[in-house]
Length: 184
Length: 184
DNA sequence: TCTAAGTGCTACAGTCGAGTGACAGATAAG
DNA sequence: CTTATCTGTCACTCGACTGTAGCACTTAGA
Image 1 (cartoon, helix red, strand yellow):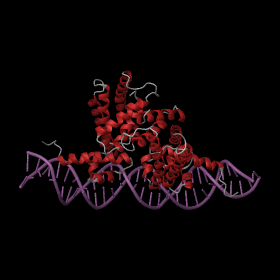
Image 2: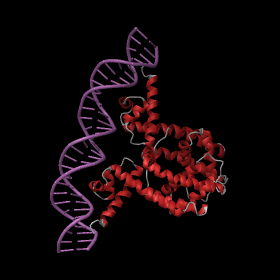
Image 3: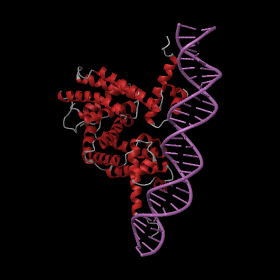
Image 4: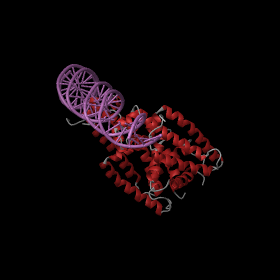
């Protein structure tokens, strides 16, 4: 086959993406050289896959977005019982936050990203409305507060509780969330 | 007097600092030129006050640190009733987050900053221990979880609830916090 | 009104990172 | 083993930002 990608090339690509995500997450100004070095690859190799720094960023964002969408599908927000769906969702997103960390302010500055994100933000808001209808969440808080708190908790758990598995961290997050803004 | 600072100079200095904080908060790579332009002064004027970009950063950090220390003092964490001190503290920090926003990862990379911060982190941990002793906070959560959640909530309220006054935002944060990780 | 403090502008040197080109060498896969 | 694919290295160009200098001008404040 001529179109086949070589295995080592695939590994390198993966390394550049994950390393890039990690480094850019706590320093958005990280150099291509630095990322390449950390990934164990030459600077030039990065440029062979990505025409520019922007393209690398886009690819990293794409990876994160895809992972999030997968997590959302897996949570079955429309069908599964609210409590179950919530826990599956939280666990999934914590995993994503760990594998594809990203400086969110920066990422959301991209229009294409924000548009794509809006879709599932809306889906999740619908889910929260269902949770409120079923009496699981309070309705006497500032509009959207619950939807703001949860992502922050998931981010916190992903970054600051590294000793916990995603499932354990999700336990803590869901507990804090449901007590904090819920009726538990 | 010869040592006296002119009033307009003081205004410009203030503008550079606050504008710098705001711009660097959502783009750590913001240019000195950009900051100067936004603050309504010439690039050269910034360099007259601060020998280098680093010095400007240091001055901004200094402003934030001082504001935080003032807020902590005002909260009287050791003496005042726990509930009162907590609310005063949260309100104060929300104010600081609004006036002196900053990219925290970046700021905490500075050693001098982290050392200085450690002092009042410890003081606040003592306060949380007191709250736990008095039965206001649960003790069955991952170590330090409460101390991690609160700052995130304060940041969130400061940035995402701009329509609320600091006091109102503090109401929400304290409520969510005490229910989430407390025994309320 | 007078003066010293403060500012804007133009111009310059130095540095660093982005991105490109060519070629020889390494390696996966048949 | 052989070949197409992938990679490292040297050697550039280009643009942007930092930091500095001198001069003419404005403004606060006594």
